[in-house]
Image (tube, rainbow, N blue to C red; front, side, top):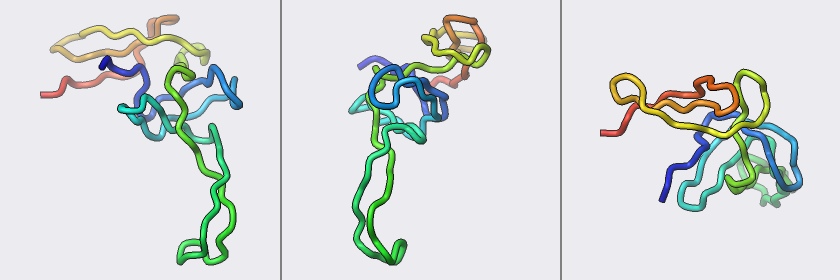
Length: 112
């Protein structure tokens, strides 16, 4: 399986679906399902029974995972959606950069 272009903490733009055109921060990435949980995107209504946390119970809004093919990382320079490139920098550090502006998005140390 190839690496995903989205990581936890990235700001992403929604390309398709009910929330098309919105942006949000990635809360969690489900690698095996190729989905991401984005803050404020793809809200669903869940019913909850009364418990200690919510004594009243009722309906709550909760984010549902979105397939990563419907998400693009936002370019830090322009604020528009962009594709991600990877290159190996100094000391073998993997650098993610925006294809539109060339600006670095995030650096990740290689796993040992």
